[in-house]
Length: 173
Ligand code: K2U
Ligand code: ZN
Image 1 (spheres, protein in one colour):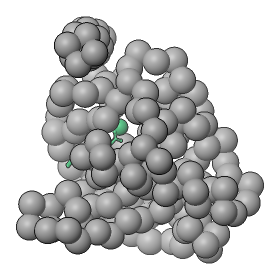
Image 2 (cartoon, protein in one colour):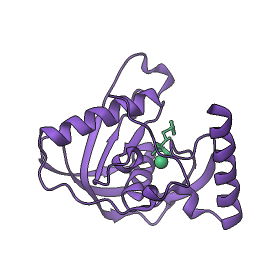
Image 3 (cartoon, protein in one colour):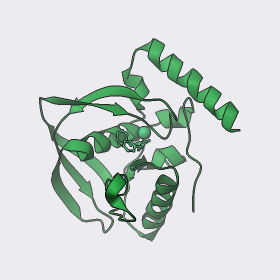
Image 4 (cartoon, helix red, strand yellow):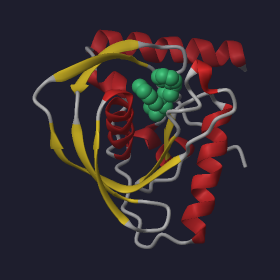
């Protein structure tokens, strides 16, 4: 079912999420809810902490976000993800976040990374990520460590972002 997405400055978003002990049906049900919530919110990634669950679980679908995707879907599941290696060269991208609605800011991150994680069947996968996959997974792993992208900005920009989210929520309420 669709869950509520927490928004800044909710202190829960600053929690460090715990590793998943066993990938079971309960975790798979959580990931199904996360995907449904992500599609509904028009995101291409979501970390469990964003719906208030402090577990190291991420869902992503880079395909459906593309304008020519039609109704194509390619959901991906990342449990206990670790970055094993990151390139020197950085890639800037104007990031947004479902927990910081209607606020976008350019963020630089390593362009390529080597990623280790468990998939939805609990199998260990090691793979390279670049382009949007690299940007998105690093944004999501930050969430697992209690970091939201505005934490990487100046205090002034961060305060402006939080003030804007509060305004957006008042109008939406
Ligand atoms: O809040 C989230 O974690 C979802 C993020 C994921 C993301 C952030 C930055 C760059 C790529 C992905 C976004 O809200 S998903 C919205 C979106 C859609 C298309 C392209 C970029 C961001
Ligand atoms: Zn985010």
